[in-house]
Length: 253
Image (cartoon, rainbow, N blue to C red; front, side):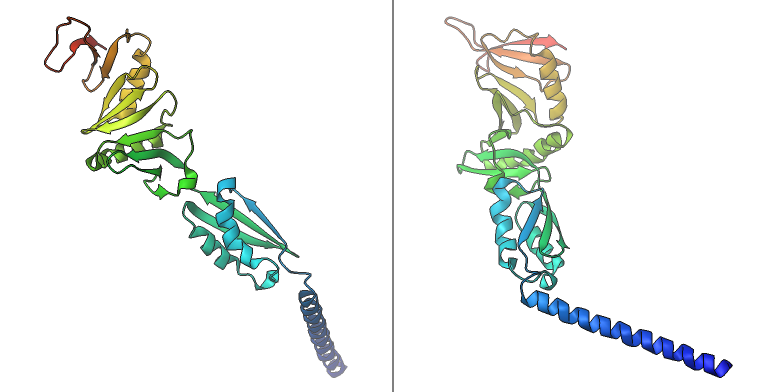
């Protein structure tokens, strides 16, 4: 009796394995047939996190895979190609059967536009100091002008400030000249000297005092001196000139 049950159990296992092999074989044949007929060809690509300006670069990577069977596309290979695009920090690609590829892109965040007055070149910098492609430029980004190549040494201070809070981008622009960061008001032309360090604190001081200081006829506000602000006015006809060319007034803060 035991021998018959043992023999029947083995037969059942073999029948199960044989049936599974037949199902797998038929499934593989069905998949190959469907693949040849184009049922699994890539027809839809869904992209997330991409701006309109970056769509051309992304399409250049994904485009050659269109109408390729989805099973023959390596998501890791596509992700690596997308991550190699300038301005793309990371990319994730996944397949969604039967014919869709899902692309998730993370882009660098631009911090400022930098214009070098000595060479006339303009570039876009990210918060990490990376130079970004020109497609990241926009009118809403703060503009920083450099009077010479040596003034690039202060760019890390500007980037550190941008990491704390958004740099002001309306009403004027920044000028880095002779080791000093200046804010140039667009309408009045007044210059606010912020210094070379602790720029965020200097700007906060300027915002607090902006409405308290009589700036009519003012040429410069110098915030480089701790605990005070120096107001320098343009001399009028017959005005007495100081050694720097302006009459200076110190106001305690």
